[in-house]
Amino acid sequence: MPKLDGEIAFVTGATAGFGEAVAGLFVAEGGRVVASGRRADRLEKLRSRLGDRCLTIALDVRDRHAVEAAVSSLPEDFAEISILVNNAGLALGRAPAWEADIDDWETMIDTNIKGVLYCTRAIMPGMVARDRGHVINVASVAGNHYGPGGPVYGATKSFVTQFAMNTRADLKGRNVRVTSISPGMSETEFDIVRTGDPDVDFYEGFKAMSADDVAQVLLDVVALPPHVNVNTVEVMPLAQTFGPRLVHRGPP
Image 1 (cartoon, rainbow, N blue to C red):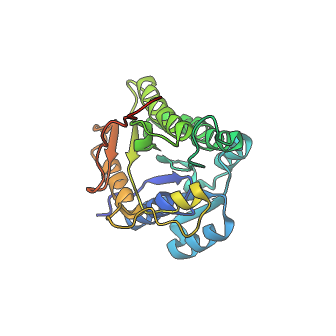
Image 2: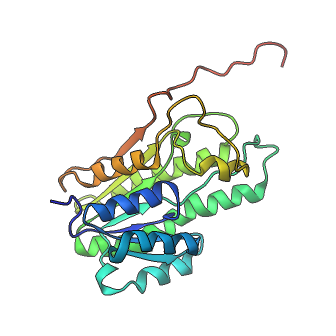
């Protein structure tokens, strides 16, 4: 029996990477998916591939009113969303804080934080009213561990997990689950977007995770019995682990 029979998922950032993989896997497992993203051409290709069980919506999650309008106008057979995957997000730049482009910071804050807030606030009331649902926030290992070159990206992903867990506390006594997943190095468009270099090969010499790997973890979490809640999960490729302390030796 398909694992997601009867479920309706709303997936943000579905035009590439984790979001696209999640949409495809959830449909394959019997669910229906509202796949949203900013690139209409990619959404059309996704819809053609996945068929009638996928509804696509061109949507920028940074636009609160657009998010509210999209959710309130869903057709009846896609309206009762039972799974929200807050996946839309990005990193921009690798500069230290004193050299970074503030426009990049604002884009990351608007997408990685506000997008999660807007979608959660628009969709969660329906879950609470039906006393059924699961919200999954896609965070990052960068939000759990410290390193140079991404202070705002890491901070936004820390927010994503903290917001998920505080929301879970709000839901005490209700049958709505909340999970924050923190993936490690995955071979997607992430570093192309971050660096603006289409030829970047950040994954040479080791086997990174794929978007399909991360989608499988999300499916496993969602398919658990409804009384089981995975609060947080951190997943890395075997080749990636925890780095040593960064120490500067010599004069300051």
